[in-house]
Image (cartoon, rainbow, N blue to C red; front, side, top):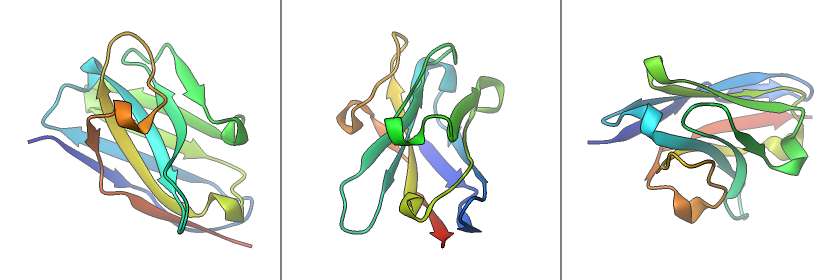
Length: 125
């Protein structure tokens, strides 16, 4: 049974930082491209960042480039999202996802087979 469990969310002030973790079980993480998405109330789920199975290739949504960094530790079956300079607009539920893909990075939500349950990030002004 595949499980992706996000952690590290919480309440932070504008300009603050958070590091999200996504612990995977039931799969071999090195076979998967991993992505982070978020969904704010009343809005569609949006792509934030993705990292290839090896970590050599990453891709980011324009609005988070330079603020967010995706990384992975295949030995620990864990993916991370370091978020700096947080803004109130970053408030959302954050999800990690796994795509069985050793070719590159996946940018669309429909390309991902497995999803975590999400972790809430709230940025106060």
